[in-house]
Every structure is written in structure tokens, then in C-alpha cells.
Amino acid sequence: QVQLVESGGGLVQAGGSLRLSCAASGRTSISYKMGWFRQTPGKEREFVAAISWSGGRTYYADSVKGRFTISRDNGKNTVYLRMNSLHPEDTAVYYCAAGSSFLQPIPGSADFSSWGQGTQVTVSS
Image 1 (cartoon, rainbow, N blue to C red):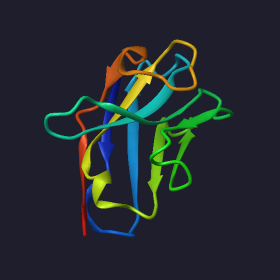
Image 2 (tube, helix red, strand yellow; image 1 turned 90 degrees about the horizontal axis):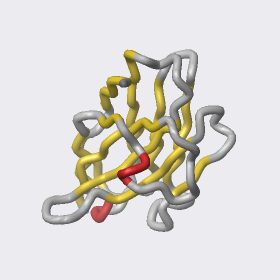
Image 3 (cartoon, rainbow, N blue to C red; image 1 turned 30 degrees about the vertical axis):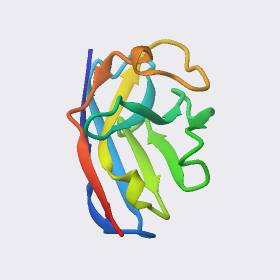
Image 4 (tube, rainbow, N blue to C red; image 1 turned 120 degrees about the vertical axis):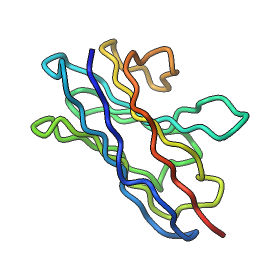
């Protein structure tokens, strides 16, 4: 099992940017794919972005494509989500996730076995 801790959330105006970080600890020797999901009250957790262990493959939800960038630094056991041109509808709790199975193009929550506690992102209009 790997432990995940997110940071970098906060309040930003529409059009602004934020960078989320997710630090992994524990069994980091396993090759994990990493992902970001988000959730708003009353809605299911939705996929945002994912990256393979090597970083060679990345996938994004259509709603964030061209605005968000996922990256990772395996030497630091950290994955990032750079969010530009933020919209009020990007407001959500953002969760980092890790999984050891092969990364599919649009992974679901069930493809990930470890989750962080979440970090709030609020975009004001």
C-alpha cells in the first residue's frame, strides 16, 4: 500500500492557475500509475487526469484537456497537476490516486487502490 498526501489547493479567481502536488510514501518501489479525480457534493467522483509510471502516457478528461497538465517526478515520489485557465465549474475536492494495474485511456475510480485525503479547489467567478 502507498500513502498519498495532496497539497496546493486553495481559492483562485476564474482564469487563474494552481498547481496541485501529491507526495507518495510507503511502498513506492512498486510501479504505480497515478491519477487525479475530483468530486463535488452530491456527485460521483470523476476522472480528471492520469499518468503512467514512466510518464510516457497521459490521459485527460475532455473538460480539462488543453488546460490541465499532469506530470510526475519519480525521484521525489511526487505527481503534479498544473491547472490553468480555471473555471468556476472546476471547483471541487481533488483527490490523488495510485494503482498498480496497467493504465487504461480513461480509468475509473476502481482502477486505483490508494487515495489521498483530498484538497479543496475553489474557483470564484
